[in-house]
Image 1 (cartoon, rainbow, N blue to C red):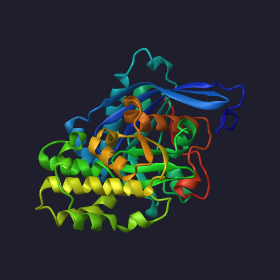
Image 2: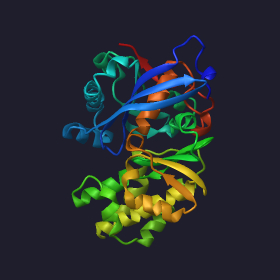
Image 3: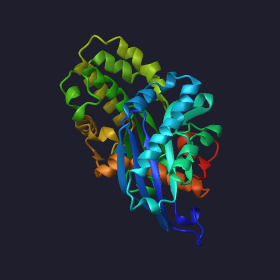
Amino acid sequence: MDCEDTLSNSENRTYTVIGLMSGTSLDGLDVAICEFTCDSYWSGRILQFKAFNFPEGLRSSLKNSMILTTEELWKLDKSWAHFAAECVSKTSLELLPRVQLLSSHGHTVFHNPKEGYSVQIGSGAVLAAQTNLPVVCDLRSLDIAYGGQGAPLVPLADSILFSEYTACLNLGGFANISILPNAWDIGVCNNLLNMLAREKGVEYDAEGSIAKSGKIMNDLLDKMLSISYHRLPPPKSIGVEWMHKELYPLLDKVADHPIEDRMRTAVEYIAISIVNDCPKKGKILVTGGGAFNHFLIQRLNELADEVEFYLPKSDIINGKEAFAFAFLGLLRWLGKPNVLKSTTGAIKESSGGAVWLP
């Protein structure tokens, strides 16, 4: 996308934007202070990235958010936003005065585009009031209203800011990939691995060492790979509800097997699912927490030896999603399309997001 698609000649061509990202894997809140420049074409960089762990009470509420009462969920909506605003205040005192906009993905509680909704909590009103910045949030609802999945949204940013790669692979709570003009959720990733790791008393499997010590349970692997979602064409997306419906029943039946074997099988399932959906050749940018799982990356390289799975610097690995949502929020602020109908299945492209002014 060149600048003339998004800006008139008289408009400011450099913007400093904060992006907030809170993933379903519950590993904390990502805050990225980003700079975007339009000089014929858009470019961007992360000026500062910080990750903040959730306080235990907030983390517990987020983990159980799907079963909260309506009033409890509204309270959580405000609590998340107060925490996020506090995190923003702890970023660079030098950079904060330059910030013109805050773009928040929020925290996904429900994602059910078939029924016409996707719910991300994190009050835009509270964020605007507490940070004294214009806020863009609720980036998915308009696309869903136009018949789209409301996901994935990041591919538009990928196509503009990371166009040198064959594809962009994000290994977050779920694994998703951008291969324009298509993009989709491949399947589960860290949400599954972290859930299993907690049975060993740890929050995650550092470098994949627990999984590496186990053996593949072939019957379980075959059943996981046979889940019908993996045969659907894009556009498609999933949420935590999908795990409860499709994966948990399979895992419950083998709960008496060694955790190492279940984790080894989970890594193989994730790796095969990814390779099945990836280009067979080229250079793929890999980001998200799963990029630090050395064993998962090893399996990807072994299964797809003609693909280069490229790991960038840590601020991009950790902060790419927040960086992307900062850019999508900026496009919304400028009143320009920030969703690709080709990736979501909507009837038209849109400029999604609610805007709150301080």
